[in-house]
Image (cartoon, rainbow, N blue to C red; front, side):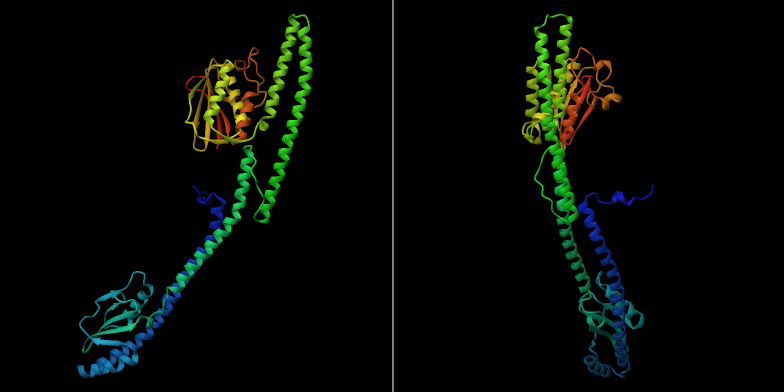
Length: 439
């Protein structure tokens, strides 16, 4: 399987932008640190140690050249101040080499001295980080040399690394704050677009970089055009409703005063069907303009819809519901219409409707089940289209309906950022419809 870097990259824009800013800084820090350690800790330290080594070898040579111990003591007292090599004869010499684990320059010091000073017994860089203690075997006994650490390595060599790290962190913090300010307008635009997709209009003012402002202004223009189109469509449909209902009412009145026979009854039925068709079509077309979004308790809304269905003579039973108090933003009249359509379909094609309400992680789910013939899986997508005609089991002539119930419910679900799912009812054998609304 080929390695794909994309699968390991962060998904959020803010995280990706931060990664783009931080990677060059970290890479630069690593490269500079490696070069600095190689040239400063190794090159400079090795040169300083080599210079000190010359003085130490001369010092040891003068001590070994003394005829007696007293002469060696005199040489020691004379050379120590001049060479700044503080020395004394003692049996307490460092045995072996010791340094702190992070003392990189100490490793170079030990390696340089070990290679060029055969009489060396040990080097102590651990007991005092500001001093170097060197144990030597001389002709007149063990000798301890004590020199300043500054003579073998640069003073405070870690300062550059600390400064680099501090500068890198400061630069990263400034970059992240700057990027955060640049990403914030994009987040606001995304929230405004998401809210508008769910039928809500939130306040939004374009801000940020020029490109983001242009995108925000384009969104506002688009939202204004869509709102104007919806308003004009609603006004047009209201006029169409009035214009259609008036002649249909006259026709109905005229037929009612005529002699009642089979033809008259058939015409009255056709007029009633036309009125029902116009009402359903207008309800579908005006689905987005039913009401405004508001905080609503789904449990109370479901109980109100079921109560209204029972008063209308429908057989409905609440199978499951969540506790009250779980508020979410929705358009209550639109959701009530969707549930009423689903319950109407359930009792139309089955003997009873069972409704339930479940609280999901980021959504609520209304479920309506029946014990009717159901809808085959291959025809469920077709059933969600307006004016859909299915097989005879769910499209009998003696059952009122124009094929808009599921389409209206699906449109309302989409306007809330959710969806309508058709499935087979496991409990009752008929159709199961899930109306999912995101929170």
